[in-house]
Image 1 (tube, one colour):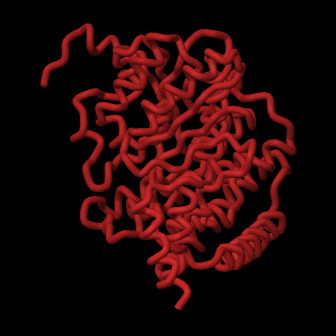
Image 2 (tube, one colour):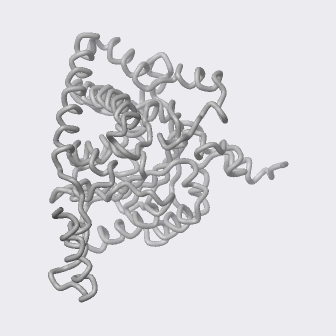
Image 3 (cartoon, helix red, strand yellow):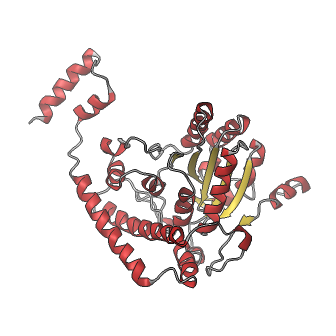
Amino acid sequence: MEKTKELQKVEEQFKTFQILDEKGKVVNKDAVPDLSDEQLKEMMTRMVYTRIWDQRAISLNRQGRLGFYAPVAGQEASMIGSQYALDKKDWILPGYRDVPQIYYHGLPLHQAFLWSRGHFKGGQVPEGVRIMLPQIIIGAQITQTAGVAMGLKKDGEEQIAITYTGDGGASQGDFYEGMNFAGAYNLPAVFVVQNNRFAISVPVEEQSAAKTIAQKAVAAGIHGQQVDGMDILAVYAATKEARDRGLEGNGPTLLELLTYRYGPHTMAGDDPTRYRTSEEDEEWEKKDPLVRFRKFLENKKLWSEEEEEKIVEQAKEDIKAAIKEADGAGKQKVTDLIDITYSDVKPANLEEQRKEYEKKESK
């Protein structure tokens, strides 16, 4: 398809924002965020922790001890970098792969495991933790984010709402509706698209004729930016700027984070070798977010192998304890679901059904 000069001009505006190259070298000094040494180390700590968590979660899934799970290895920089730029009072509306963000925002780890198992206690978010549960419906969280941002604006809260989806989510109608609404009402919202190149098995190039997802912000009249999603500093800086833009009354932002998932779409039978080549996997592994940031920190004398090993061991211990706590949640019963769904006054026929289930469960 031959593109018009006008369209070419639009696409040329969306260059990939990057701070660290694949070797951990700073290539954009003016954009380096003002972070302390401790903050830099904390970001690395969270990425290492998340990588170990991911490995263990995959193993637990294969053992039948976890339930639904969408692997995150390769996407740590996009997840950790964006969440780290938030305030605890900001709202996160995640997709089903975005469990690390809500964990670092305050959801206890054992509840993350319970959510994966489909246990109702996994959805009992602690008071004050501003998250929605991971959305299974592709794109639904995008329109919901516009609504939450509208609420924040009406209440006069100086906070934002941020949401996450993949490149496949950017092909949904909800994606355009949510951004359009947020743009029309100048809402404090950030729409993050983690472009990991495949909507399950469909390559991003076959989903849209647009050269970038970021340029789709133009139609909604909002700011759009494409970011190297394997570069945690670039992700942090772009998200912070987007958050500031929303708080200052300058409207929502669409961030396209270029990243890659090393594993399958989910552990529910997907086989990425059927639609991805080993050459492509190897190409993206060279851009690994942990390797890149590790080199950056080592050059600054802020990181060591011994320090990382301590984090690995801590992650393993925490995960072991969280699984044990999740195991102690008790078997989910039908009567539990009835009780937490309805008030004290239940429809007569439901009350009868509850008594029947109570008899069955007492045996």
